[in-house]
Image 1 (spheres, one colour):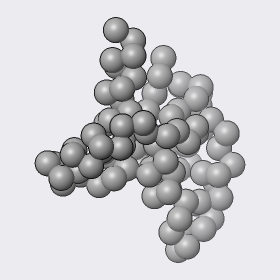
Image 2 (cartoon, one colour):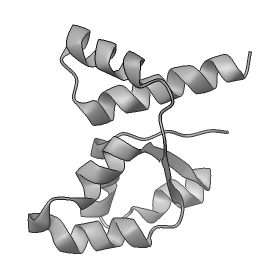
Image 3 (cartoon, helix red, strand yellow):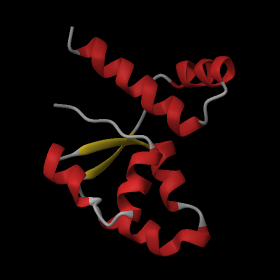
Image 4 (tube, helix red, strand yellow):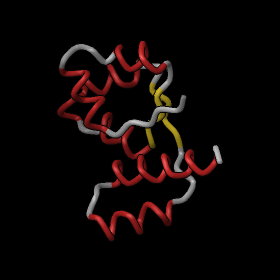
Length: 97
């Protein structure tokens, strides 16, 4: 099973001290690079960023179709992390068919 996460579920589980549930339930979880940056680049949350960096089950992944990310953002107003996660999901869905 391929699992792709946006920022919100990771932050919510981390705040509840249950980030380990992702690994227990799914093994590895793919997160787009934009989601990884959202989780690790804000200096106000340096302790939380270090927790994310130490989670070897969170797999930072490139999104191949950047043009689709830009189109999705412009049409929907979603942020870059959400858009990359959706484009990554769509690519995985079509790879399986």
